[in-house]
Image (cartoon, helix red, strand yellow):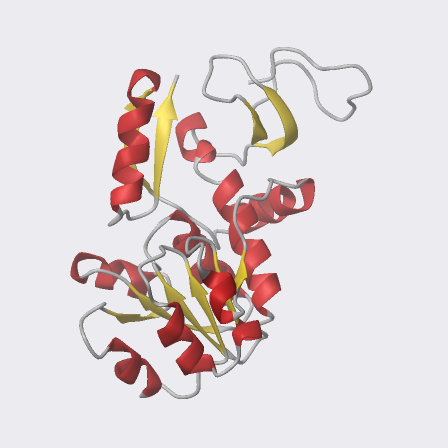
Length: 228
């Protein structure tokens, strides 16, 4: 909820419900650098799971250059960014193949993607679905060489998690920012029922370290959020 509006800020009033991105946000009060009104029906906890993952999803889809009618392979498809990528790609007419753990196969399918497990031989199983035009690595599990083999071009592979990407000529797209344009698109998709990112688990602010540790351990379905 907006507690105070800074000088020169227009279009928003004290008391309105917003979500967005800022610095030092693990706090009761924080200054946002970008924001949008929370869509009707979303709680504060639910809304907190959208800004960073939607911005990242939109950015990596743009960077990898995948177009409607093409096929995108997503490694780490069940996490927060993966959940957003799958739904945004589906809305844009992009076919998606998503890799995830055995427990998340039905979840990946529910988001409109073809689901594959990480078991040995998964690249060959991916090839059975036709040519792979682009690929995203969202969890840094050492799959970049496989993704490069599948697409045949480092320009069509992007990672947000593997710092050794440059050794293969692959782009690393790490932390960005929740731009107003990304937030506006998130609001539109949510309002039209085209985007939903579930909360895998919520934590009190005092357990922020545990939230990070759990996130790094992987196997997330959707987002983890901190409650203040």
